[in-house]
Length: 262
Image (cartoon, rainbow, N blue to C red; front, side):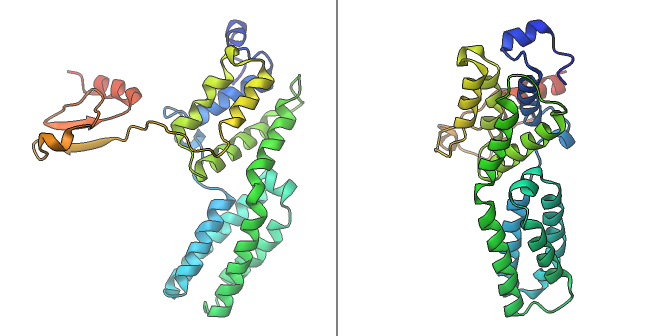
């Protein structure tokens, strides 16, 4: 990833060390809509699986058939715990507890109240342990990124940590466009030296509410809506195709125009 970047680009971005350049490029790639799906940010992690399990267990109290569907979620949670380097280092007891949880889900017994209560208690304990998961991810990232020179064999670990951070930020509600804008912070020397840029990057995700404009793809028949209903609605070009309005992002608008040009 870093090998094809010229010395001039490195200097322009102020990212001359490989581990800083790799971090910035991988972050941008992870959140870019043009990146292959399998290389983009994942949609789940251990915390999201635990929340899904808790929701399923509560629903199973009134709808027992739901309980059987929790097996695949529990197995996914266990696999994530075994592969997540932050969980293995900072939350090691999670794995045996998840193994116990999986056994309770797959042992074939009826989901009686006591069993559901015990499994829910295990899931709540696990969720509580993971409360500072994001802080531990950032801590491990800084261990690598705060070094002046790239550590040996850093890319695999750094790549996993970048993915872990992106998934967790997405899970707690940060939008992909807002996250992607972190690239602008990392790649602009006007934001200071690399350490200051990294501080700014992580400070963006301090959980303070910020307004952010998002454009949602929307297709509606023009003739079915009176003009009064369209007042105050902003449509980006192209706005009309076969008597329909198309509201798209600026990036997709260009592609849309190219794709449908005669």
